[in-house]
Length: 353
Image (cartoon, rainbow, N blue to C red):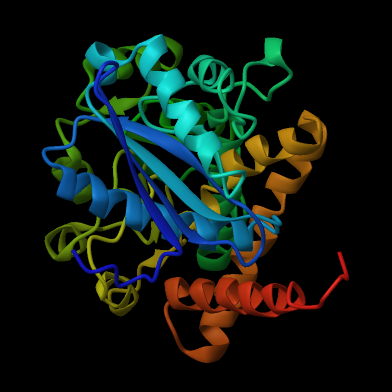
């Protein structure tokens, strides 16, 4: 396939004995090494895995730029079912491939991988973060991911309703796994009414045990068509396409999923319908802020304070969008590209080393 995003490096990794099949994509290192998680997923084909890792790594470049990190964009995917194929040997083989890149890529957790997995990967590479607390890491990065999404949602509410509180608003959360169930906690605490759906009944049951008043609908289509004020996509990408945008009654879209827009142009359809879209890579950057903080020795208070700035960044993007007459997704891209260009240019100053 043609790489329309202009990645710097794409590496295919294979180890027959452990069964490892992985792809590492480095999109941009203008701001520093590419940091992004490792997704372990049973892709239908290598082509599908490649398309995903190219999209995700580009998203990480923009996410890290707007999070104010001195890090570029990278991502990795391991092809397989983590429930069946994950093993110590496979993870360690993957770690050795990460090490061969010499620090151009720093890995962390994503869908299908956990802090415990990063501890194993780190036995073969210096360039793994998102470690367990026992190994000096930040632990579960979904904590600040959910917190950051909540800050983005507060900013969205401020922009649309004139108040940062979600009290009394009806919020639909698609996907209540790692991040989604934590977001539900924050919303309930803020006084929101919450509606959820998830393909995993155990995930739904977990939420209902904590919050019996939460409503459940059958599937994502029913959630999008429901009478809600805010739609929060927190499952896999591509949640918003032509058909789903037409279904939405929500005035705000703000969620944790990566690559929520199924194709270019969806952001314009949302704007035309008067639906405010909080760019996913802006509001879901709390997790990468959390794992990036490990690089200088993790401090939760410091990381949480930085993640809280997602509120201000989101409001700034809405302001730019209004001033320039463009959708927020376009405004966010411009702001990220500006930082990559301006700060990246400084890296060209010779240090004489």
